Amino acid sequence: MNSPVPPHRSDPRPRSRDRHGRGMRGPVAPPQVPLAVSRAEAFDDLVRDSVNRLERHWPQLASVEFAVQEVPRTDNGELTEGDDAVPLGRVAEGTGDRPDRVIVYRRPVEIRTRTRDERALLVHEVVVEQVAELLGLAPESVDPRYGQD
Figure (cartoon, rainbow, N blue to C red):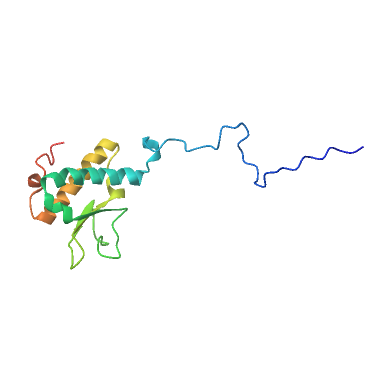
């Protein structure tokens, strides 16, 4: 007896795992849901929100570059071996064509906070302190609500 020969597929593509005609699986959560945002992206958003609040009152901050870095580095003098405390941020003075920079260190801030609200408050305090140092003012002058929350 002859065994039945499977019909040739006219489609040269390999079969996909779309067995029930519902399409390929998508992401677990849509992009607008907080699950889809990484911790680093959420932290960047907190810094951006804080900077936007300050730029409304201090237009000269438009020329300042704000950055987020994971941790302070020891190879370029941001952190020395004898330091007892890890900084939460720093100011890098501009040189020539490079603008002034305010750097916020993500991991030290995250370690000191438990909730997103605590993190938002601490990020804002760090940004205010660094901007105050850059402008040569007291933090309370930069943001009157500094230290009240």
